Length: 178
Ligand SMILES: O=P(O)(O)OC[C@H]1O[C@H](OP(=O)(O)OP(=O)(O)O)[C@H](O)[C@@H]1O
Ligand SMILES: Nc1ncnc2[nH]cnc12
Image (tube, rainbow, N blue to C red; front, top):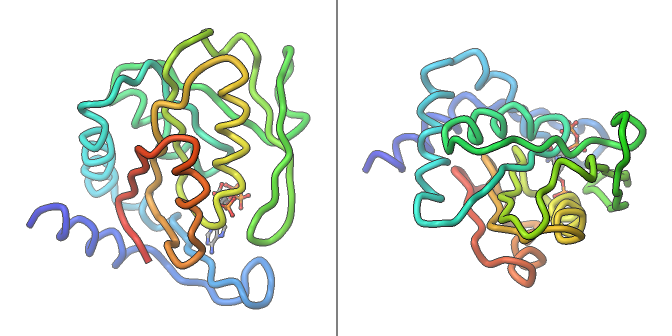
């Protein structure tokens, strides 16, 4: 089965780093994927295919690793890409949300005029852990638009982040799970 093969191949290039950025965290390092352009291309095609029957007007990617795949996913789906950034980086008028991480807390922002009122925005990030970041992104989007779905490269299912997301939008896709 092609999807299974892809999952195995992606897993084989992801690097586990123990105790980063804090003791007790097993960090999933996705940077080696970027050293394999044809694998990356295949991944983006597979992610886009997961949403072929979903109305998606734009993809919103979460800084910073969410940009790596998110902008390629938006390009593949032929829709605009919206940058959700960490606090204080966007120059024009923003809306914002605070959230908790597996290893800390943060605030995210988006340019208010980047989101078309009433549109269907697919939220993308590289990894789903506790779900705090994705929930905050969804809250941000929902101030003006609808959440079309959630897209991740990796779902750390043992942290049960998708349970939080289901209440917002049950269309939650990931390429690989741990
Ligand atoms: O589901 P959660 O518990 O909220 O965690 C997932 C988030 O954590 C990581 O981002 P990080 O804040 O490390 O930033 P980065 O993408 O800039 O490395 C990851 O890229 C997700 O955005
Ligand atoms: N375990 C983990 N590995 C990589 N990124 C993360 N973001 C939150 N938890 C993470």
